[in-house]
Image 1 (cartoon, rainbow, N blue to C red):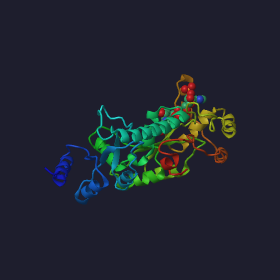
Image 2 (cartoon, helix red, strand yellow):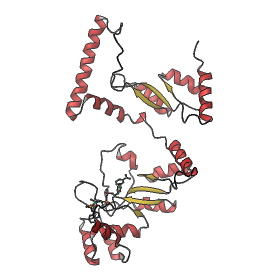
Image 3 (cartoon, rainbow, N blue to C red):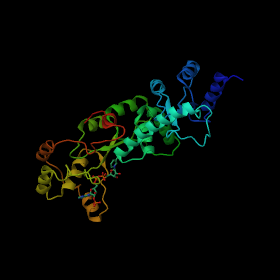
Image 4 (tube, helix red, strand yellow):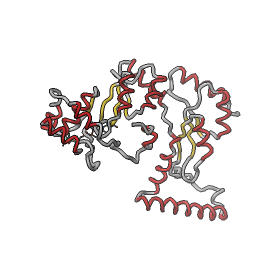
Length: 310
Ligand SMILES: NC(=O)c1ccc[n+]([C@@H]2O[C@H](COP(=O)([O-])OP(=O)(O)OC[C@H]3O[C@@H](n4cnc5c(N)ncnc54)[C@H](OP(=O)(O)O)[C@@H]3O)[C@@H](O)[C@H]2O)c1
């Protein structure tokens, strides 16, 4: 009974076409087997589940899958399969000695790294896998298609994104049949994002500003509310720095989500509608030093997340 891969795969493709499964994939496929499959598949495998861990890194297979948009799922990421019992090949004394030495060396190396980071060996193994970005490329088209379906089915009133750069929005708009209603991004006086604002306005995408007061938990000095320029403007209007921050966002036509657990400050944050910033204020505001609140490290890295736009 040689494997009739073509027949099996066609049946799997039919399952996906009939909506019986969202995606189809393979397991333990080498590059050669994947090449064969890709030569006749009309729906490509979404995933290939293979052993991958620090002692079996599979660089060639990773490169091939990345180039062909196939997600790798690593099994045995900690290299510790369930009770596989004695192995007649590896338990051979000579082989075992070599293997033991290699295993000790490997374990020592991982342990050194773990110790240096104050982590466990298991965490080092998993972190390494996590850092191989190609293991999980974001399938934006697939995700967005599913989100559009949610809206069509009435499960969501509107769909949107968060932390999308102009480049990412352009990509999304190139295939979306329902454009995103909203893009939630950091926006405040110390990270004003003029280009993104202009792009979203031109494309009817509402911006929701997060960290509008620039005051996330324990992130050091507050470059918006503690900024002297902002304090001066606030004093001149008899308002608080927070109110100046929020009024500016309001005047940009964006929505924003200031967070407060304090009733008085919640009230204060609502008192921004019966006054306005002057041209002189805007002149000063344009001089505030711009820098992103979160400087990293993040995953994906900041340069990939935001495409180095401002
Ligand atoms: N999509 C994303 O990636 C993302 C990332 C970050 C945040 N967010 C969302 O954005 C929202 C807010 O962001 P955030 O918490 O980072 O920043 P924020 O709203 O700019 O700042 C909140 C902080 O400001 C204080 N505050 C509120 N009103 C004030 C006032 N009038 N005067 C002085 N201090 C005041 C609050 O303290 P008190 O409570 O003591 O008033 C709280 O510590 C949250 O809903 C969060 O989930 C989204």
